[in-house]
Length: 510
Image (cartoon, rainbow, N blue to C red):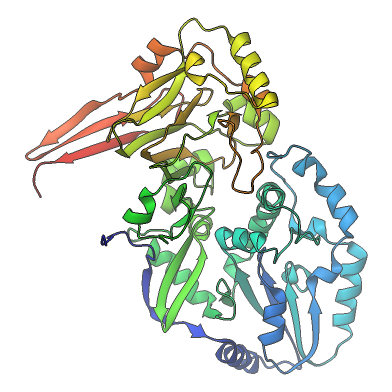
């Protein structure tokens, strides 16, 4: 049995503050904070991110309350919410439009007024308001507790049919539809709301592991953010299977050997990953994007912050096709196209760095010289409609790939990684904007065909990126930058249209 040195559970050590574990101790800590407030009427708000089980909080938080209110009861009717977000969810099976709404837009003014009036009529006692938007109901709450949730756990809760999208009840809907709506609407809305609250947190509640809650003070969390800014840190990786997935990640990262495969390993996607802070007495897990929101310029640097604001514009993930299959043949949208059609400010330029490869490993990249675009599109349409095989190698250039090769993939370039390799994908961060052209006639893990986006794809394919151009501009563009005793540094990738530069260091001794 191989021994892996891959750390699946990285933590950031915070030794100056206490973590409170379990509902009993959490309840006691909140009650102690309440007792310090010398008022006849005290309001505690527990505001929640998407995916938090509000019923778990209400069931287990034992406080001497005189009244409990759930914020979600003041939301718009479901049909009104569906109408509100339709233009951002769209009818497209994969893509939507980035939503500019705020959480308050999902609430009915008359319901909010009625709830607030009912609270105002209570003259004395402890009042608890909980759920998404709780702080909007009681903006002057005496104690604000924020219950956060990493996106990966939200996805797992979707797959278990345990949660719905914002303001509606669609637990049983297929995961892909729930994820799309969350990506384009819910998480944008919740993130805006969370950013407005971060400086006001009295306590931060972690309910990522059901029935194992942890809580720290808002002061402790702020100091944890400050500590992270002063040191290297890693996010918590997660792994997911896919129809083309391989077996390499299982061994190298010591994953579940009984799993069918692992296609993706996400090891630095702050919007999706989490970070774990190790406090005295326990660990607290929160979305790693909180660090970007708390200290955007310090984390990103001045130039990146000026260009992207509080958004982490680069992502890293592993693509494992060892003993697996080819990725879908695909293309990413051009800058103007993604801005006009999906509301994104930049597009997905990326590159494949080969971490490992078998002798027959390949990368499909660029087009063959002198092909006829109309013929390629016709054959793609026929293959996708009839299930007949598409002769990819008739139109797309296929390059042998070996360990340490680096292939640049600017938006508009037809590409995919072939079987029997492991790719470190270095990419800009627009999430799911991959236009599949051909998926090799296979089914997804759910037994259904994965959506093809040929119409979007043909609007973005750059037909002049043929064999000679690709070889000259995109394959192993290594330039030595500097060297010293026992080492040298190379630039391995900087395509003219991309904001991502990659460098590699070789060492001959310690």
